[in-house]
Amino acid sequence: MESNSSEKVVKSKGVNVWKPMIYALVLVIGILLGLMLTSINNGKKVPFAQVGYDKIDDILTFVRLKYVDTVNTEALYETAIQDMLSSLDPHSNYIPASDLARENESLEGNFEGVGIEFHIMDDTIIVVSPISGGPSEEVGIKAGDRIVFINDTTVAGIKIKNEDVLKKLRGAKGTKVKVGIVRNGGGKVYNYTIIRNKIPLYSVDAAFMLNDETGYIRINRFSATTYEEFTKGIRKLNEQGLKKLIVDVRQNGGGYLNAAAEIADELLTGEKLIVYTKGNAYKRQDYVGARDGLFEKGALTILVDQGSASASEILAGAIQDWDRGTIVGRSTFGKGLVQEQYRLGDGSALRLTVARYYTPSGRCIQKSYDKGKEAYNEAIYKRYEDGSLLHEDSVNKADSLIFKTAKGRVVYGGGGIRPDVFVPFDSTIFNVAYAEASSFIAEFTYKYYPQHQPEVEKFKDLKSFAQHFVVSDELYNNYLAFAKQQGMKADSSKLLVYQSKIKSRIKAFFGRQRWQNEGYIYLQQAEDLDLKRALEKI
Image 1 (cartoon, one colour):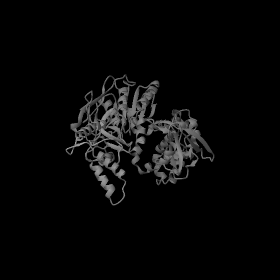
Image 2 (cartoon, one colour):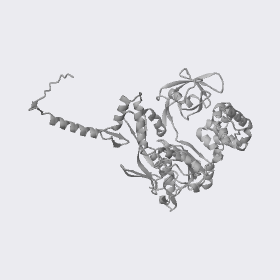
Image 3 (tube, helix red, strand yellow):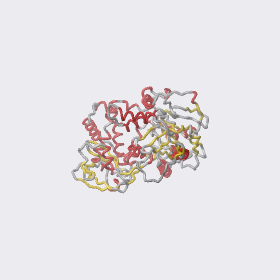
Image 4 (cartoon, one colour):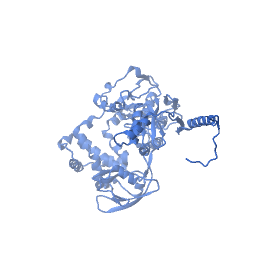
């Protein structure tokens, strides 16, 4: 390549006098690059791998240049990364750039779009419910509405998929989308223009009074907004005479550690240790309660089950270790590892396990993953088989994992948080006839709720609906006819023993259409064996 520079190469006895200077310059540049090649995430510096021989790159280069068939080397690269991380532990993982936004939504507590929950049935998009306070609710879209046009494009009868609906309805805040709605089975199309906005993803499903003195709060995950939602719920219940509290974290897979610690602080008195973390590259970090909590003295119960994990176990562990309340349900999942997320240069992310967390008594409740990721993930299903969800005495309690609570009670580390009061898993769902018969209730509700909407909306509140709305035999028989049309094989006579249970679920789903998740949970109290037991013990 030609150069217009006026540089000259000076030689003396065949030796380039610039060489020492060049070597020095290369050394300086190398040092500077070493200092610069760091990624700063969450205020922490994480060094990149040292520059050197990269065997993975070499192998992929050979595959790309020499392999017998054309291959997607980018996909191979990502597979190699996933396999490498899975060999570390079950929770370190790689998130491609295309999936990162969706992965982060539930943790951040919001997304941008029109704000509806929908379901596709009979090749039609049905609005299950508009999200409270969202732009769809503001323009008048209702549960049961059928979306037939989006931006003048027909979306009914074209075998549209969920991901296609999301692409059409989601978008940047402030942008517009036009939808055509058919309502109440009529033929008229109602046109709405919706201005997209930030849509809250609520992590607190319900906060209501079970009786005159006992409140109930259900948390489905621990996100950036959970603490704020929780304190709002507590304040509402305090105004209604709260003296006893049940916090439900069943099937809550976790989330942000800080959110769980802040909620525990609202329930514990004084400056008590809530949880501590430590890892190879991380010194011990203590999370200690600091504020006067909103509910520090009333009777407290935490509802847990086999799906309660991570941050849920932090909350339950702190309450149990300080003897603050009673843990009711079944042994939790057993995830005691802490991940941090690091953005990578191409927009993807690494979630890397950086520490273990320990309850105040010193317990690490992480279950073993020595047999690999597949066995680790299947362990939850083995609990159905080995009876540990049905019989407390089938749970292994190793003497080497004994710890003591503040009052000297014995608790165990390893394999999750064991409840103070064991409640067997409701085995009704194992009945084939009942399981099949109840599996069509959601779709029946989505399709037929508009016909019964006036009956539901005449009730001023959820409590009056619960007391006075009755699922008639006619509505029940309409459901059975619908289920048979959808392929139900169970004979109606075999379902007589489950009729009241099925009617209860139909009522709960109708309530959900009107009062969202809180409606469903409130109306399923009578069928919730864990909650019944919690009410007995609180």
